[in-house]
Image (tube, rainbow, N blue to C red; front, side, top):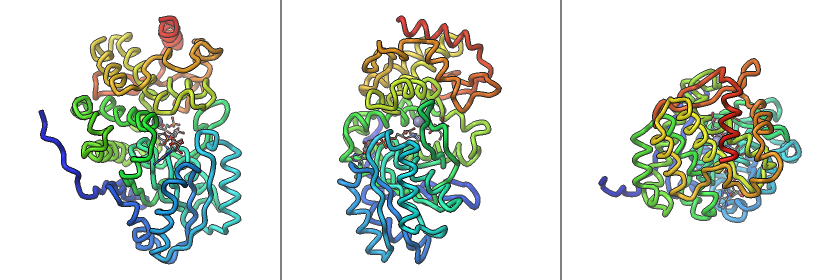
Length: 380
Ligand SMILES: NC(=O)c1ccc[n+]([C@@H]2O[C@H](COP(=O)([O-])OP(=O)(O)OC[C@H]3O[C@@H](n4cnc5c(N)ncnc54)[C@H](O)[C@@H]3O)[C@@H](O)[C@H]2O)c1
Ligand SMILES: O=C(O)C(=O)C[C@@H](O)[C@H](O)[C@H](O)COP(=O)(O)O
Ligand SMILES: [Zn+2]
C-alpha cells in the first residue's frame, strides 16, 4: 500500500523539440497565471480565444480576466460543443472569425476547451496566414493528458477521423486541474481511457498504480495531478523523439484503429465519445494480441477489467444502438479502418501488445485475420 499523495505545487513538463520546445504547466489555479505567462512569452501580443459554449459558460470570464490583467487585448470565437464543430463548417467559422478579428502572424490563438476545440483552433492557427502561434488551455481530462500536447491538429471528414490536419505545436500549455471540477462524469471517464493508455502501452508500473489509485483520480484527490503529469511526461518523451509519427509515436495510437472506425460508424455522435472508442479499441487490441499469441488471455482480461471497473465501455455491444447498420458489420468496419492514417500501401497497421506496458507497431497484418477476429467479437 503506497502512502496517499499530497496536492503538489505546480508541475512543469518540458516538451523538448528544439526551436519548437514548450512547457506544459499543470496545477490547481494555474489558469490565473495565463496572462502573465503569455505577456512574458510574447510581449505586446494580441490574442483570440477559441472556445465552445459550455466551456465559455464556466471558464471564459476567468480566462479573459487573467489576460486583461496582463494588458493583453482579446477577441473571442465561440463554437458549438462537440465533434460537430470539428468539421469543414467549424473550421470555416473559426478561420473567418480570426480573419475578421485581424489576428496577425505575430498574434496568438488561445484554444480554451477540450480536444475538439484544441484540434480545431490549432488547425485554424496552423493555416491562418500560413501559420500563427497558439496556446493550449485544455479543460477536459482528455485534453490535459493527451490532445493539448504534441501538435496534432485537425478536423474530421465524414469518411474518417482527423483526416485533414497539420502538425502544429503549441507554444505553451496551461492545464489547470481545478477546471475539471465542472466536467461531466461521463466526459471525465472518457478522458481516463487515454490516461490508462499510457500505462498499457509503455508503463506497467503506472498501470498497476492506476488500478490501485483510480478512485482518488476520479474524486479529485492528489492522485489526479500525478496521473496528469505522468501522462504528459510519457507523451512529451515520445513526441520529442518522433514528432511526426515516423515510428514510435504510432504507439500513442493504441486502440485508435478500431476506435476511430467506431466513432466514424456512429457519426461522431454522443453515442460514443472519443475516449470511449479508445477504451473499446484498446480492449480489442489486447484481445487481438492474445488471439495472435502475443500476450496471455489473463493480461488481455486485466486491461478489460480495469477499464470496465471505472465504468468505461469495453465491448462493441456496449455502444448505444449497436445493432444498427454499420456497427455490427465486420466488412463495414474494415472499410472504415482502411482510411486509417497508419495504412501503408493499402496495408493496415495496428498497435499490439507484447505485455502490459510493452506495445509494438505491427505492419502488414493479414486483413483476413483482422476481419475474422472482428466477426467473432461482433457475434460474441
Ligand atoms: N490532437 C491530439 O493529439 C488528440 C488526442 C486525443 C484526442 N483528440 C481529439 O480530441 C477530441 C476529444 O476531446 P474531448 O474528449 O476533450 O472532447 P470535447 O472537446 O468535445 O469536450 C468534451 C465535452 O466536455 C465539455 N467540456 C470541456 N471542458 C469542460 C469543463 N472544464 N467543464 C465543463 N464541460 C467541459 C465540452 O464542452 C464538450 O461538450 C476528439 O476529437 C479526439 O479526436 C486529439
Ligand atoms: O498524439 C498522438 O500521436 C496520438 O495518436 C494521440 C491520440 O490519442 C489522438 O486521438 C490522436 O488525435 C490520434 O491521431 P490520428 O493521427 O490517429 O488521427
Ligand atoms: Zn486519442
